[in-house]
Length: 303
Image 1: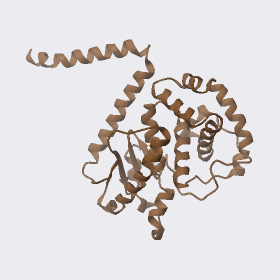
Image 2 (image 1 turned 60 degrees about the horizontal axis):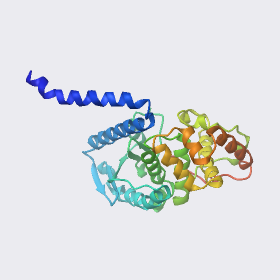
Image 3 (image 1 turned 90 degrees about the horizontal axis):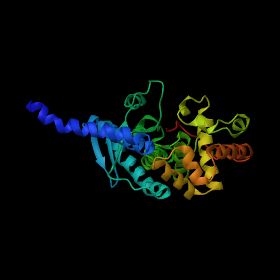
């Protein structure tokens, strides 16, 4: 009896919460999804915080880096890169994070992939996942030690992944994949000069993907360079025809829980299908003459 009496308030609270969610889901589905996503993201962040407590930690004004002792000599370099992109990206997208952002350095691609369930044959230089940034040790991919710091700044994943962090928090997870990939590439290019190596002539011969193919199925597209190129091109299209302020308005509406159709109508005054049609028409004229990803050499990318 005493055990039931002790647990009763918790059961009552849980029951009331479930009733409120049930009643509110039909009326405010976007808001509740955003709240639920935020809770899940916080759980993922805390889980990584807990699982990496034994690693060495170094801090700066806005970031914390955790790593194995073997990577302690690159921790400060990673922090410096993060601090360099922090203000410009926050200012560009209108964001101010609370607390310090956790970055975890993994010594190998295998360990990085295992940290969030990737198969052994997949790899990247960096990943944003559930409120944290995870990066492959620069020692694993930079071979020219004479220009180590500059190489990491120019081709590393920090600007790209921090942009994903910002977009995810502003929208509470309510964003199409092509939007965050396009914004991440844009910020990375503008800050570090990094762009993916893309064959412009080959792009002109490809059939463009629809934007709805570059959302949940983004990673399944057979031509990943085309998928990334189109994502950046979509952001350039929005900026050219509407402005970066309208993009920020779109992000704000998504963050308030509105679905894509409502958010696009409210921001641009047209349906998403009309936006897609205008973008695809613009893209056909754009590809043969202008490549939003300049032709430069690049190593592995970020996601």
